[in-house]
Every structure is written in structure tokens, then in C-alpha cells.
Length: 180
Ligand code: FE
Image 1 (cartoon, rainbow, N blue to C red):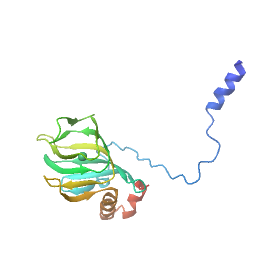
Image 2: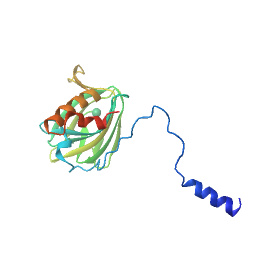
Image 3: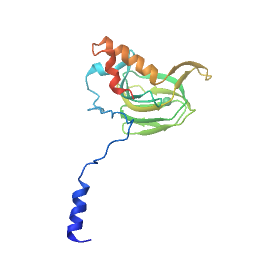
Image 4: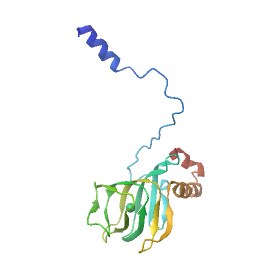
């Protein structure tokens, strides 16, 4: 390659794509400060007195959601079965499942396999646990014998978030920015 040709290739590398994007493409989702646990309290959607979540994406089209779950109590959180895969990155605190030996601690990545039934516990002494969960499909709350007692999925998350954002004055449609 001549010096001139090398220069031309370098120049081309910095040129933005100049064609059209594919027809049908949908909008990006950009959430600034996504891991900021001290962000505007109104963003956190309460699930119960001590448990709330902050949505990052609510994928109605593919049936999954990514959110940060924040728990401010110790003890049993829930027993559930996953119909789909889960990816979990613990940001703060620590937790574990009664059925497994491993612990999720700050910085731990965990893959939860579809079909697994487990009981989440936040140990004594942890004032706040925060974990980024990517949950596909439904998770089913179960009793100790595995009988279903309730479900959670992207649509229950959307419904909770809509009601909360309406109640705190952001408007029910505030949730729309997270839905794809
Ligand atoms: Fe789980």
C-alpha cells in the first residue's frame, strides 16, 4: 500500500456510515446514570415496603426486562421458579439462594438457569442490596412444594411502573421511554 492509499483508508475509517438505517429499526434506549443508586427517588418503583426496582428496559416485544432491584431489609425475599434465563450482576450488598451454595456479592455475575426453583435471602447485617437483573420470560412465585402462587413478567413491571410514575407526578407515560 502506498503512503497515500494508507492515508485514504485512515480517513475513511472516521467517516460515519452514510447510508440509511434499515427500515423498521426501533429507537435506542439510553439511561444516563443507570447504576447511580442515589438517583432521583421517584425513579424507583415500589414492589413492597422495602423492595423497589428501577427499570432500564422493558421489552414488551421480546418478553424480557432489565432492572435494578433494591432491597432494604434482611430475610426471605421470595421463592420462585424461572421460566427463562436470568443474568444478575450484584452492585451492592450480598444475597444467596437457600438451594445453592454460591453467594452473590458486590461485583458477582450470576446466570440463573431456566427451570431453577430457588428462595432468595438477604442475610442479616445487609442494610441495602442492589442487583441488576436481566430477566427473560416469567418468574413464578411458588410455595415450598413448587405450586404456583403468583407471577411476574415484563407486563406486571410495566403496570407497576405506570401506576407509580402517575402517583409521583411524572405521569403514567413516563414508563414509555423504557418500553420497546
Ligand atoms: Fe431467581
